[in-house]
Image (cartoon, rainbow, N blue to C red; front, side, top):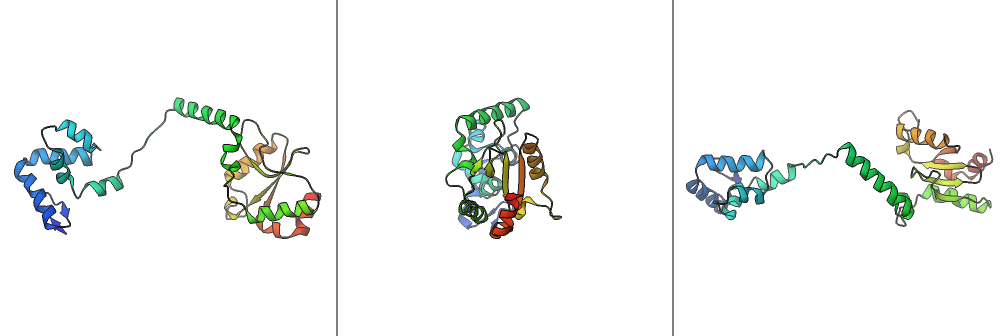
Length: 209
């Protein structure tokens, strides 16, 4: 690496350093520091800097910022904050869209990965002539999806992976709230660890309970 002794910017080749040094000769330290500060601290883009310093050629600005640009772009984070009003509008539009396009929900997409334990449980139900609906949406205003549902009796079965439980074996906060909310609407939700799906006798016992 070759470092500019005046501004400490590093370059991979001598040629790049030489091009950079020419800028030092053409522009005063003050102007160079202002341009670099605008790019680094004020988060201005190349276009904005060009408009602000229209007397400085674009190529020279690029050379001036060379060595900084890639690093800055990787570290630069643009944070967009929505107001409560825009969040509400976005939420309403999303709800309206999902109402009109229920098949577009993440849980209803055709390319959703199949869960082996869930498919195993479904096969057990089919072999025992037990009718069910998969990926059923029990509520109109909330787009929760139940793995296996029996709408006629308002009973649902959820097959959970380890990520749905905390270190003590209890449902995570989100899963617990979701469970209670659906049950508050008159449903009974049975939470099953995925490992039980491979034991037909236990599944039949749970279903017939």
